[in-house]
Image 1 (cartoon, one colour):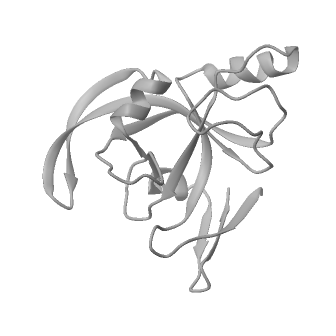
Image 2 (image 1 turned 90 degrees about the horizontal axis):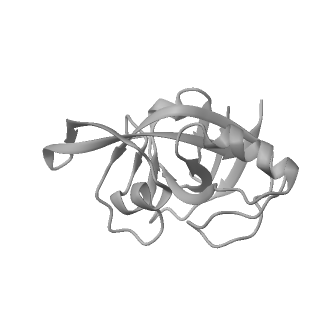
Image 3 (image 1 turned 30 degrees about the vertical axis):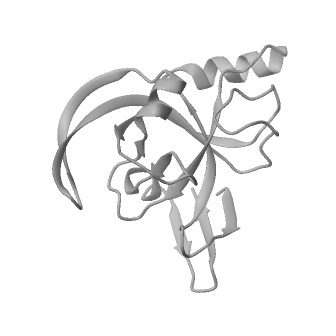
Length: 158
């Protein structure tokens, strides 16, 4: 069972870097990485949010990555029920070192051990934080084991 651990700032919460692509791009990207071609995978900073039932992305990130809009639906938030766009995405959780590159930009080809989560439904959410553009929700967290301690450390295994 691959695991990743980290230290978090309690004022922000646990952050992890994920890979985000439109559907079916992860399989193509793995093939392209082997052949040395450019890989259209975006590294994205995500807040691990045990209060979010569904993984969510900002509108800007959905547009930047090119996620296809598949529906609109009402969702319950702390501020009440609001309409939200629904997208389809592939997400990969890296369990090895991520190649260097600017956050939100396509990455250079490099082998990275990652667990792919294909064809996942993600919601659009409003976010004013400069620290993350994505919420990793319970739809993914519940597929593994997440531990967060009072020592400001966390571990996620899937």
